[in-house]
Length: 314
Image (cartoon, rainbow, N blue to C red):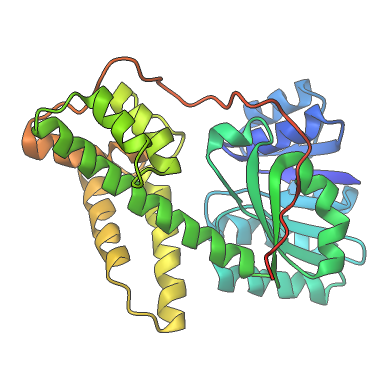
């Protein structure tokens, strides 16, 4: 299968790298020519343009920063969609938007999948990330070898759009965890606790989380570098709010998170690293919530291995 990959940023660059390392035929495209050159040096072909990729490839993956960016790229590709062509949307996007564009792809004779990833950018680098896939079963089985190269755990979530709902749901949970970890660590510092001890207490407790064990470490290091920014958090929890509103569910916590990140963006800028949401508390208290012995960035040390489908309990 010839694969086109559009979007070579923090996540897309790593996912496309997994495909290349494992021998897939990949053509790459990004607005940043340097990113494309890096992939060409690693064995990819220069995809030239979205339109050219859809013409020359069996499947085209988009991994872009916003629904608007995906829509713009798809507008270039749609005239070249036909039987046998697959659009794989790996961006974190809106359920309604992926259904809208997916319906156009299907009407043209192609197949559409929303297949966002979850588990941290550092895990995307080693194929040790989770992937949700929304599409019909036949399409899922056709693309499963591609997905299990990029991800360790692959879940077929149901129809097109279902994966995007679950992706923003899980990103809401991660955001809630990030804010609670920031508050817990700041309180620990204010109460005179040794932050190294506090970290370990949280890690072995019922209150631990993936976010604590990753973002908690870069918070304490002071780098706050988790390769994710406040504007992306705001986008994701905004999309989750849209899902809740369409479902008629009156949320209480998510609107607070939206306000917290609006304030963080107003203070520190949209491209500030998301763990630096703790700076709101550091500035309010005058505390420095850092400690020695923690890494500046997370590195996945698990060996790369072939992924597999996650079977749903019935």
